[in-house]
Image 1 (spheres, rainbow, N blue to C red):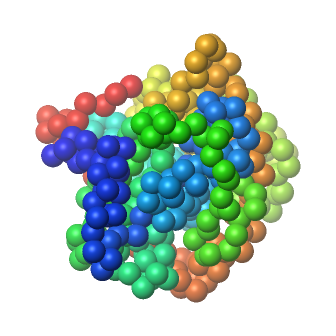
Image 2: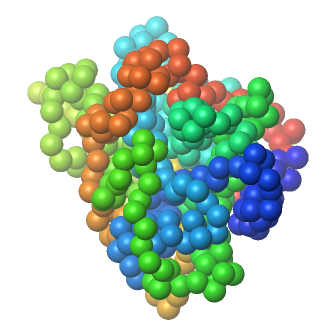
Length: 395
Ligand code: SF4
């Protein structure tokens, strides 16, 4: 059943929905929203030899020419994921004496990793996984919740598409946890990869360089004049944000620049906070299957020294995701470096300083730590018996 759902999530499916929408009577038409990930934008910019901002502006024009009504940026929803992860970590840190599984807290934004953890290590590992939703799924909740309310539409009258660097994001969107039973609609209806956007452009005979730019949309209706992202690597900067917040909140220490110490390889790195020779915080990045296996073995033997680990299935993280565009005529290493340079060229945003995010917390979510925050921004995981697993995990 999951493979059927996933095949329903493709650029072909999006084209079908757009064609049906154009032919439908006005009262039956859906409002089509596309949310683009910053990793996908960097990959497209590298492929089309454009800057990040012009890529976003031209992509907006192209998508709207196909019948899309609004084009958003998932950097906005990632602010919520980062803020919630920070707070969740501090809560877990305070409860570590009573709850042996409170720490280490393991990041949850990568569905490749979540799928593996649920199917391979199930009930042992689940309590360690952060309950904070990924940026894709927070965007799903915002679009089908807040934005639907603003547009005076029920959630099922919005068709929400995300553009992601990753095939596993299709599986994530298909999880029953992200299905609205009342309205029989998913928070994210369709996920297309960066490569599928390129196929769409080719299918329409359009070169992004030749497209005129459009102003960027924002969910709160204000014009966006520049692009932003989050510091700390192409997978979202979870480690950096959680580390800085925890250092300040738990120990009153302001962290300047962060020093990563490579361990076995560049995809397994450590960051520590020390005071007078005492280690206060010990965090790690573990990217790629080998490093994840190593981490899980350490956890099982009770020898994992970390308080927090940013776990990502792809070596080098999401910028190197399986759904990204592979550039022509260049070695894959150079290609990845180019995408990384572009990704990092965006202004680094500090989630606490984003006014629109603060307003939504205050007015729509009912304040930090409210019931609605738990319902809208958090999720749960499910141990799956290996024998019953219908999915093959690609590594
Ligand atoms: Fe997808 Fe890879 Fe990123 Fe995980 S690390 S979310 S599998 S692109």
